[in-house]
Amino acid sequence: MISLNRYPVEIVLFMVWSVILLPIGLLDVGGVIRVILGLPFILFIPGYVLIFALFPTRKTDRGINLLERVTLSFGFSLAIVSLIGFGLNYTIWGIRLESILLCVFVFIIAVGAIAIYQWNNVSLDERFEISLGLSRFKSKSKLNRILNISIIISILFAIIAITYASITITHEEKYTGFYILSMDRNTTHYQKNLTVGENSNVILGIINHEYETIDYNIEIWLINQSTDNTKSENEDKTTIHNMWFIDNISVNLKHKELNIEKAITTQWEHNYSFSINRTGSFKLLFLLFTSPAEEYIVDDDYVDIAEEKINSAYRQTHLWIKVN
Image (cartoon, rainbow, N blue to C red; front, side, top):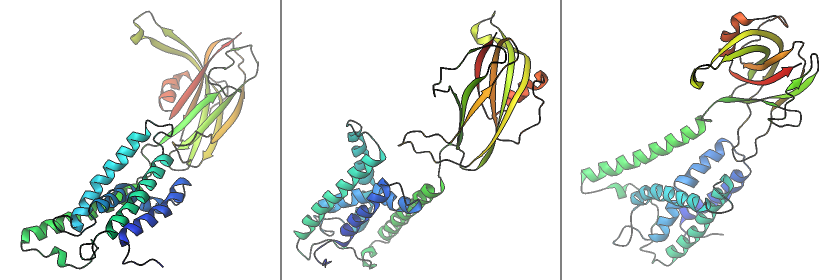
């Protein structure tokens, strides 16, 4: 059994805290629990164990009090984690969640062990121990008492605000990935030359990072257009002569979590087959909407709403195809 008289309680607690967090962080589990455990692990604990190792004594000419320890711990923690990240940037591991987590864990355990050793080498009457009594706030100066209380309230408010923000702000940007691939999953090997009525195939893909379930609607249009490039390059004017409706695809997708530490994975893909019954050079336009599908007649020309339709799309991509 561990004797609390031989070990500083908070240092042991922080070391156990780190041991509990390590598998939760590495295995990417825990949700809110991971955030609650992770914030002190990054913002407070590294600095506190370092300050404790340097100043294991109570407030004397060789020690500092609890308020000073807490205040310094935040600043030192940010500096420690920043330096660890800076160092990792020049290693083969790089700045990744796993490498940061492991390095901070090793730092806390190693410096925590040094802090315990330092504390045990201090005489009993000089050892720093946390006391929940109010006597430490008693001061001959009323101004000092007000300042101490104000600092503590500010620190508590900062901890609460950061925790709340980390839990409630689950994303920085909403977006949808919309793409076309050739059948060999390449972005350039498309079949660009076809004969009238010849079938061609592409892969359509959507990834939902919108943090909500969305009904997507893909409209496929065949566009006959020309570009007037007689003026300067920045003033080229494109004129749409025809815009024929080809097809429509609808799909319902749930939000897919984005993990920048892992390779990008697909969510929804569709092998789309099409043929063109006209000769000429065309743009095969794929428009993505998050609104309900509208009814159009296949092969009818909707050039009168072309500009409005294209501008209202949420996402779009296209292929250039020549048909002989």
